[in-house]
Amino acid sequence: MKTYLSVLLVFLLGACVPKSEDIVLTFEVQDKTAPIVALVYGMTVHELPLDEQGHAKIVLNHIDALYANVFYGMEKKQIYLEKGDRLHIRFNGKDFSHTVEFDGEKAPVMDYLNSIVVMPLAEEDYGLAFQDFVRKLDQKEQEFIKLLQARSLDCYGKFVKMEKGRLKYAFGSALLMYPVGHNFVSQDSVYKADDLYYGELKKLMIEDEDWVDLKEYRDFMCEAAHVLDVENSNETAIYKKIVGKMKYIANHIQSDRVKQVLLNTLACDYVEEFGIRDIQELENIYKTYVKDAVLMADYQAKYDRWDISSPGRPSPDFEAKDIEGKVYTLKDFKGKYIYIDLWATWCGPCKRELPFMRELAEKFNGKNIVFLGLSIDHNAASWQEKAKSGDLVGVQLLLGRHSAFQQAYNIDGIPRFILLDPEGRIINNNMTPPSSADTEMTLNDLAGI
Image 1 (cartoon, helix red, strand yellow):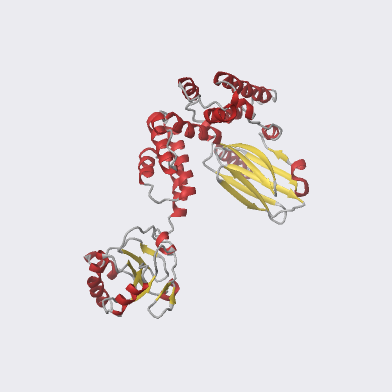
Image 2: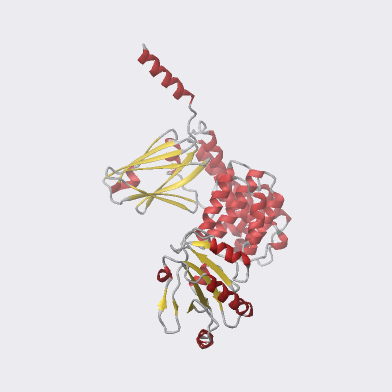
């Protein structure tokens, strides 16, 4: 009886545990011909190693709905997943396309996705008059919706809604291209976007918190923000264009969720491709409106991949020569704290720090720290003359202009001071100068100095 009650208690307790909202995707591959299976969505690529039995698994969290592609070698299949889904994919590695099977609640959805190809409009359709073009778009969208309805997938209500949105904005993207496409195909240089055109675009600016998980929807909404911002629609500079889109979305989108996701999309896409240099205006908008922890973590991860000079990270390395021509790198100073002075002989503020640097170096003489001057002079003779003058202290090296080290630290102005620990990790990437009383205090507080 005691055993029975224990089992019953475990069962009842288990029944009270809510279903996990994580998505769990598993693979089973027979006759492996490649060591990995890849899951790709947006700019994200997960390469999943197959074990000896041909099994792989991935758990995705913080995702409401997701269209993705599964690649094995050069072949691919499309899948759709929602939070809480469990999907098992099995296939023979020698014939992925024809042997793939989907086990899970939404298997019929996968079969639909992999038997329907959404075809874009033909080039000649852009030669149609605008109202005829809009009717053509609607006709094509409805043709594909009929194919969807014929599959009797109404029991998958969220998917049906998402798929209708995907079709709407897949064809909606053609609307964005119409002015340029029409002029090109029809050779009609007279046509220009008018109120009728902008009105059709605005009809598609639907604020839907489900559709915001669709790449097609996000792409349309972000690009339409540029087109509808008539004042800046001719802007071609990439950064200014991104900031313009963000401003338009911040000012015109009412749904907080939609606004945050679109702003996150624009900011992440820009940072991932172009980096974090001179993006203060972008960050001002982003940090004002985006408060969702998951979105912020996504942006921060992309930001951090560029911010290689943040405290705690290994310092970017350098190659620099002393006055005798000997080449030094960071490893030559391993085991000591390093106080780096990035300077040049032509820099007045740099030269004003030199007496303070001498005084600081004398106070820490014999301590576990090296004072390292890295000159960015392009004129080696000027640097050599200064190095021989006796005005400099510590180790003095010629780094030269436009070095990878300078670029990695995003240094536009000098003097610039950097403090590294004995393992070459960054303590402060914008350290106080020798003339500051805080500098001596900071150095005295270093462990093992």
